[in-house]
Amino acid sequence: MKSIFNKIRYYFEKQKLFNRVSLEQSNFSILDTETTGLNVSKGDKVISVASLKINNFKIQEDLFLDELVNPQIKIPEESTMIHHIKDEDVRDKPTLIEIEDKILKFLKKSVLVGHNIDFDINFIKNNAKGTNLANRMKVIQPIDTIFLTAGLYPDLESYELSNLCEHFNIQTDDQIRHSALGDCRITARLFLFLLNKAKDQGVNNIAGLVKLCKRGLSLHHIIKNAKNIH
Image 1 (tube, rainbow, N blue to C red):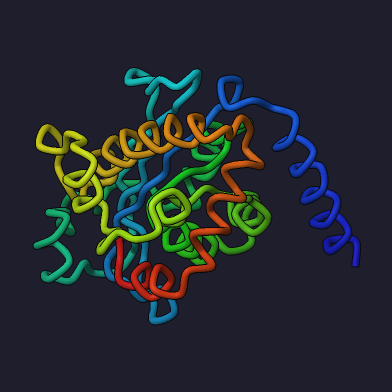
Image 2: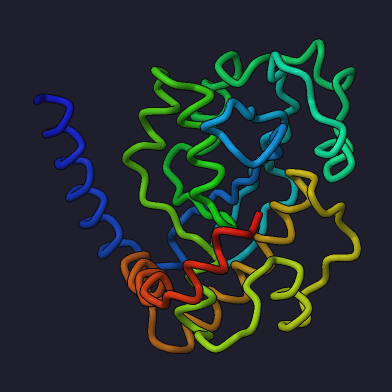
């Protein structure tokens, strides 16, 4: 019962903060993971996690997290073909639980942002079950760039990251797709573009971004589209 009330209190405290802090004052952490597969319920694991910071509408290029993670299971060849991470690359790396403090410290006092961010959150909650990191992920209010885009641009044919960047003329060719840090940088560029568009529409705080995400989430074709994106 105490845990439930703590979550409720955290939610309302967060809502007050979201209404009070301007976009310029807000700190954002872009998060991405790479995994052994797409199905966390069938035992797939995180093998790479990356995050970088945005504040005052600028990407902090020199402030980032980039960690390979030992999944303690074999990485399927078909997954390696996508992200190019092999068993030998992670064999001597720490587990996700062993780096939870490092991740928590990096994400502290920031709004979590990602492209199809629920995918990453669900993997972290499952793979780090029972930890402070997993508990943080249970109550966090993230910004998903899929739904933020949909809230601003509801009629696009695709909300896949590469397609969005091509549509909005956002550079991607200097980054490695399906590497956690590369996808973080690309997502950060998309998010900055969306932040400026939201600001042009009169959105000036995190609560406004959340409303745009909820508007995007309400579109059924976006929800269907999001299930097949990572």
